Image 1 (cartoon, one colour):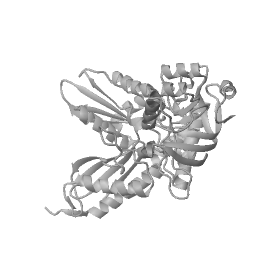
Image 2 (tube, rainbow over the protein chains, first blue to last red):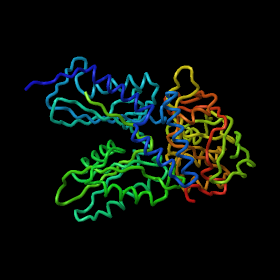
Image 3 (cartoon, rainbow over the protein chains, first blue to last red):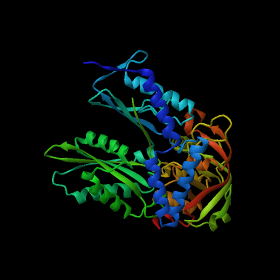
Length: 282
Length: 174
């Protein structure tokens, strides 16, 4: 089988550029959801928050100031074509390569180094290691999705192991309850990723991966369920900033995986309005 | 819009109601999780802490590093509830104001009432916007904590909302 060679330098440069994009600007599909909500929000506090958010996005882009001071942990989802081969020379592993790119990006771009060792909580001083996930895909392409994940929202993550016979509306209730419990902490209006099925950790993984689909074209199969979730969450009235309003959740996406006859894991990942991500193909 | 000057006095605090939009000017102190832990440890040991708490506002912030030629990096609020376990001790030691984002515990709310203090909230995730209201910023203590050091921050018309007023009224329970 002929393998397509991919050089370390290319991957490092793409990751570096992705961190730069995601730190100082939001993807167009995310901005559109925020700006639409700003026009439609009825609550004066909620509207004010969305106006400030819009202003913040503009200042971050124009003056190159990080959108949020929590420049997060880097989460990277790689999809590696089975007909590709990374030419490792300088680095021994993909993790090592990724961490190199993250380290220089955080230093050069004056991003906050928020990663600490566990359990002693000493800062690693480089914002590494990144959280790295790799999947194998057919073909000779390599793709990655990079997410800058802040912990105001990460701390509100939930997992519930439902019984097999759980009804759809119980799941919707659970997701809305997660957002209600989180209240103002994850910086609403939020984006929701839901992972259903698999094992506990697979559901968690899927919920994070589902956040990558935010604002993109809906898949008809899940669109109705996702819409019900959004509506249920918005009934809470938490609103932008948690000060009340019509818009608590701007989009929700579901990813599924077959599960065991004895269970039904459901995981909920929440992203703040500053959903910072970027996708690249090599 | 109400103007607020630091350090805070009883009269100013008394006039502010939960939900009021305010603009804060003067010195505020930036401190978050690890700095709080240390401050409270020092207070409990009866030792001196790095700044005079009386009438001051602590802003729950860990800014991004300051690039050359600018005043401060991105500097939005962090989640206040993580500071709840430390806040009552600081209020009892003279602190009058806090600023962050999100709900506070009942214990904090009670202490706010008994100490005649106030809790401000500001715009979560809007660190670029909020940096525009900072006129000066310097690290003053616990430098080894990196982004969790204590910062002395001069602000002018820094926008915030009264989250919990001195009577215990809470914007999040409206």
